[in-house]
Length: 347
Image (cartoon, rainbow, N blue to C red; front, side, top):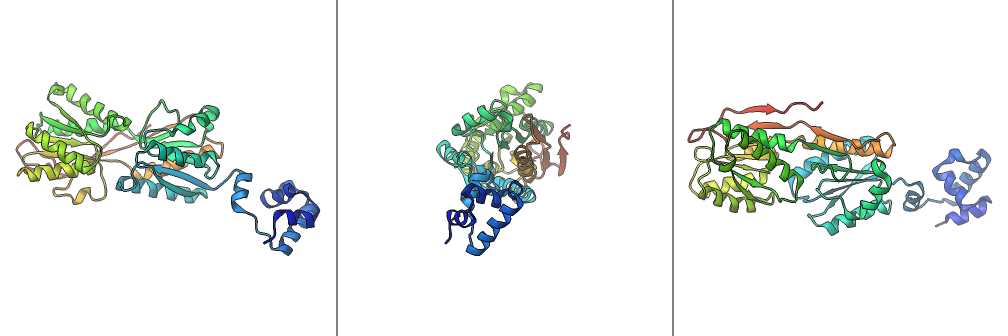
């Protein structure tokens, strides 16, 4: 297979000139460009795509890392991101970090090596290896956060207002007469878990019920929520608010195993509105996030940065909806009538 050196020698130019003809032909004089192209055709030279990527500084790829690729919530975000990336002429490389900081750093090195043009991370940590890049480039760094929001990180982010969403969920339970409410949170290190807990506490405090909240810590998994729900049921709560639909599934299982009914004995609220939430028994009341739109907006922010049209650090807050289904009802009563309470549209 012919090399760029052979092309340069036959055309009587430098290898740099050959590279410019193939990557930026407008920068080379017409006679030289034609001569090089004729040699390329004669020899059947095919440029090394990886090497050209490094020279042109454009890989036409976006790296999107997720903390748990088995979680169906992230599948919907990825789909929205891929649609927006295709529209902008980029491919998406997906990395499953499994909540491991070392794996996060390994993926982030792809950006440092220019194997990808930008990074969207859906976890709550900025990979440590990118700290220097962010300090050096500031708002021009091609890094965007999706789902979580940590203002101290200093990168553009796309998310919902998790505190307001959680406030809405607890207000709904209080309006149904619930006073002894159990909360199953995510890991305390997670900003969205902290925000959701803050919203729940805010709603309870407005009604003088903060001392009646029973808070337990989960990890967004059904298994952890099952164990915590068993403990909450022993505390005689009449409602349980879980910070993910998957945890709500664990809570529903614990209620059933205890010989109780939902919502007759205990109401349950989830978070995310996963595709199967409406097929739970009973159908789950939950906070719906615009999952696909989160992915799409994150890509659009990143592409703006790559094209030099995005300057100040932007935080995009998308609307949520409290979707009321059959898993919540009055204390000691049946289910509430299904309605959808939409959050205020962002300004």
